[in-house]
Image (cartoon, rainbow, N blue to C red; front, side, top):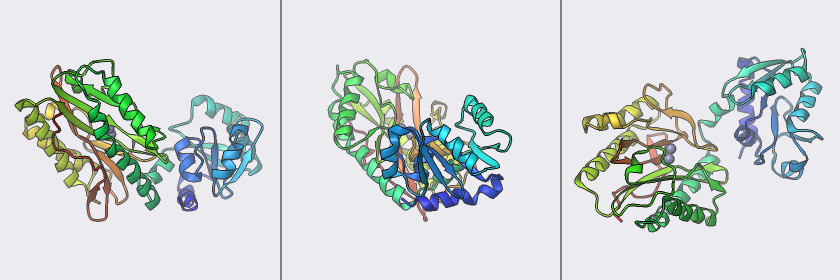
Length: 357
Ligand code: ZN
Ligand code: ZN
């Protein structure tokens, strides 16, 4: 990972932000800029970058942190950062407005006094993270591949009468055995009528003898998240179920086909939405088409209606249209997609033909 290049890109924006330094407190951003994977650390992005942490992480920080002086103080990471900022006589300090609590801001302004002005910045590091570099794309591919490999494992655990919990447990056990650090979010196993819940996390509900099961899950591998959804059917699908499944798949393929540099996120969303509208299912597609993925499960860009963000090569997004018919069933199909110079590459390898188990 080229942490130096990332820090430089951040520093290149200081003039426009009218800051001398940025206090990076959101841990995924700290990781992105320094390589530190622990849970307590602060990065002061400045001409002389400093990383501060507390005693628990002194060993880890020395090994991991690149391109910054490491300071391990007696107090908290933030307390040490305050001392460093004072020493550097920073006049205008950017803070991450999206992540800092009001209480911390108050404390900072009290500790730093009048000589340092706090400047709210908005998603400055997140904006750098939208376009993934080559190293990141490699890691994302690995995470996505692991996710794809797990589909047959969870399908084997889908037996009528078993609980959704049990299917999720099989999936998560297999993920950890294959090296996943964690799941990227609470695993969704939503069967039968519950498949109509767009966010139906696994529950104690029993799997039916017949019906759809929405499986939406992801793993974290080397810090990077994967995210995929497949809808499978226990037993034979009815003709109505098959019609809806085919429409969602067509919408998903249409959205993928619309992904290319220079297109807007809104256009991609519209590509999926118009297919479902034509099929008379538009009103059942109640969420956006996708989102960026990386160190965090939900990143920019938002793949939603009217979003004017232009897609750029190196962005990694999900394409996940769905149809949810309350009281009956739901279908969602989700892949991770890399925006390339010419168009797109679907990273998720699992098949999308309707699996009838
Ligand atoms: Zn998902
Ligand atoms: Zn997703």
